[in-house]
Image 1: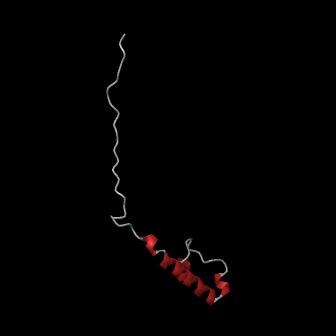
Image 2: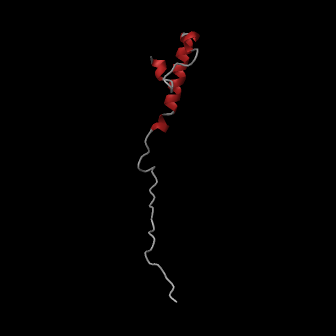
Image 3: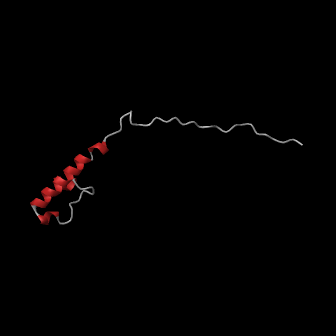
Length: 69
């Protein structure tokens, strides 16, 4: 069912079938508007948009200072 796939939990909204054909058509139209508006957010970032950071890891020194008496 087309409307069922438009819902995040794969269930029809409560009362949508009893509301009639107009309510179903409106619900599908609302979903398609939201889906179209969200296309930008669904894209993978391009390489130019990914910040390139270098991480330097400092290793602890192996020299231990000991005091001699």
